Every structure is written in structure tokens, then in C-alpha cells.
Image (cartoon, rainbow, N blue to C red; front, side, top):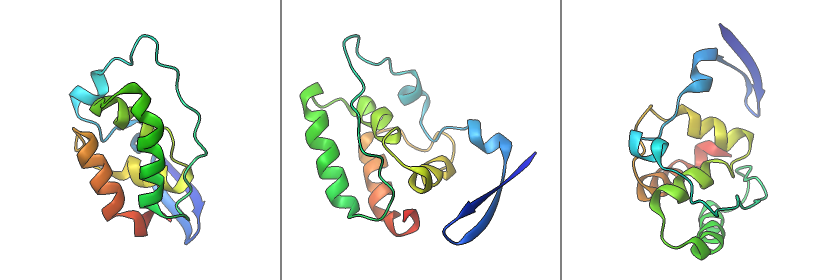
Length: 114
């Protein structure tokens, strides 16, 4: 089934099956959120502000939970607005296995996100 959506550049068509895939490796997907972890509320990143500043802000808020590689991955992906989330979902399935990979990919592709 094809789905058509409107983007800043016009219309975009993608397969409905693309909605259920995850760029996270098996390890990231199976990571259990900490028992007492309360999901932080972030203003969703829409791609129009400085991506490096967004990462600094995100990292500072997550430091309270320690240096949790997989946790950062899982929470960061939920802080993305529509266009950045589309970029995230377009990453190859299983291609992200660490926070460093996700962070670097985000910075390298920031021009495509906004």
C-alpha cells in the first residue's frame, strides 16, 4: 500500500511497510527502559534550528540518567518532529547500534532533515 504525504518540498510517496521498520539494531530494540525512568518531555525537533545545539540540549537533559548508550538512542528518536522523524525512519533497518552512530548520522544529515 502506498501512502502520499505532503512535505516542504511537495508530495512524497512511500510504502506503508516502511512505517514499521526500525533503524535500531537488535540490541537497541531489546534494551529495557530503566525501571524508574520517566520519559522526559522535549519540544519536538523540527529541523529548523541548529542540530548541534539540539544535541547539546538533549545530552544535558539525559545526563541525569548516566551515560546510557541505548537509552539515549531510544529517547532521542522520540524527540523528533515530523520531518526529522521521517529521516530517522528512512535509515536502513538495523543500521544504528550505538548513540555515537545515531548522533553522528543526525549531524551528518542535518541538512536533509530541515
